[in-house]
Image 1 (cartoon, rainbow, N blue to C red):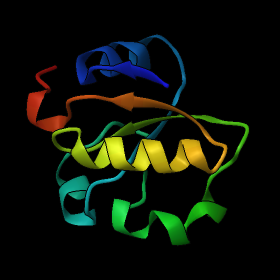
Image 2 (cartoon, one colour; image 1 turned 135 degrees about the vertical axis):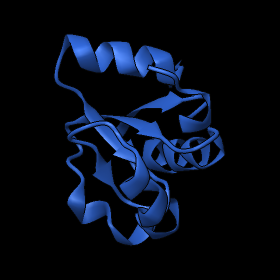
Image 3 (tube, rainbow, N blue to C red; image 1 turned 60 degrees about the vertical axis):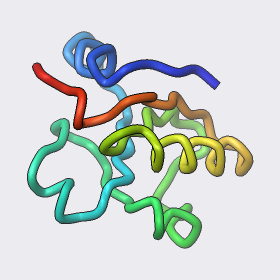
Image 4 (cartoon, helix red, strand yellow; image 1 turned 120 degrees about the vertical axis):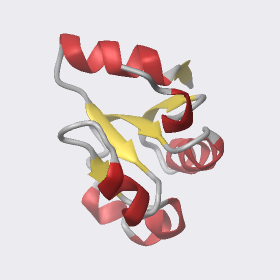
Length: 94
């Protein structure tokens, strides 16, 4: 599984269209997120797989990287292609 930082994610999003899966709670997502991100809280992910495309590479992000790690491992086990953001919004300064 590939791993990147949130700074790398921000730069990558500026370069091309990518799929970003933000697994923070809806309240945190509403405060700040990358445009076009899909928000599925990590606690709801197992019941929300029908919202994801198995042929899409998802860049998984959260606040500090803990939920993104859990979600990335889970999605990878389910056959999804993921890139784990190892830190998170708490580390991002555009």
